[in-house]
Amino acid sequence: MMKLYVIILSLLWQGCFWVTCVKASEADLEWKEAIGFAKQGETDFAFMDFQTILDDCPHSRHCLGAQFALGEYYFLQNNLPMASEAFEDFYAQYPQHEEALIALAYLFQIAKIENRPHDMEGYRSKAASFRQLTFIFNDKKSFRFSSGFQRKYKLVYYINKVELYVNDKLFTEIPF
Image 1 (cartoon, rainbow, N blue to C red):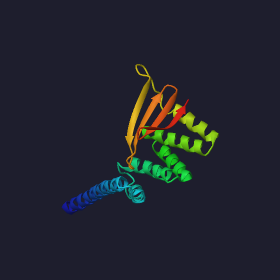
Image 2: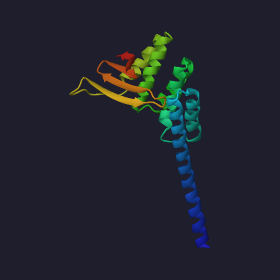
Image 3: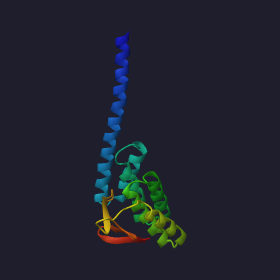
């Protein structure tokens, strides 16, 4: 009887592990497919795959990139209200990640485009207090990020501002 109990317990434990592995593998496949669509310029299909990762594999290592891609997609589609919502959600979910500062830069730029100075000031304040950075030997620090939509980001922190470059072009600057 004890042997049967151990076997059942063992099978249940292995089943839980198997489901996790299947989900991880599924997320990897969805991510690769989304990247493939993005490289081909099929942004709508890439967007659907990024959304699938978030819906079906919420604990995947690709969630940060997929969540960021949603905001990026809406911004590229010029759907600024949805882009704002997506980047706000991203910032709320990943406040300690450097990618969150990129989301803040997008939110700042959207507020600037929509002529919302009060929101611009709020995002400026959040960017200024994002991290207490010390610049002992350098006057700047930088961070690089490649998005699911194959855009290359470079975030440059200065003592008095943050600059965001997208594909080597200045996208926005947030002065403090």
